[in-house]
Image (cartoon, rainbow, N blue to C red; front, side, top):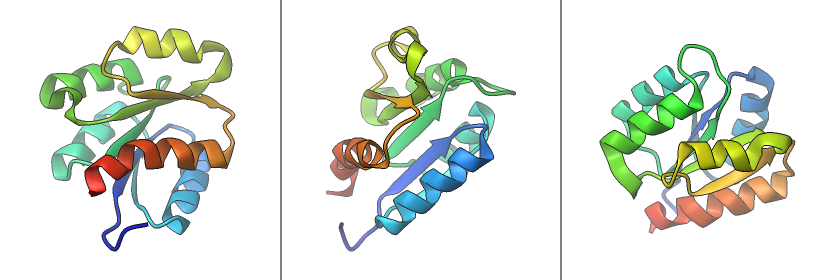
Length: 127
């Protein structure tokens, strides 16, 4: 953990999942912001570019594919995106997003796996 917390944006339409992930990451020393769809995620990124985005694929208003495409168009590969999605579709959904995805975290996921994935990508920005 660094003295300066690393900002993580969690994007999912499941409020329970958002809260669990927010609590786990906050307790681990990260600053966490949340969005419930891709449109909100883009607005949050415009306010402050996070070190990492944890992005669900199936959401209302703007889904994860549209959101990832828009973010890649604006920020390129400089903004790490980890797809969080149902296990049976994880690989196919990540491949559909394309080369801009840095990792995939299949739901349901273990909190240790979440923390490993976040530290792998977020630590690059915190340095």
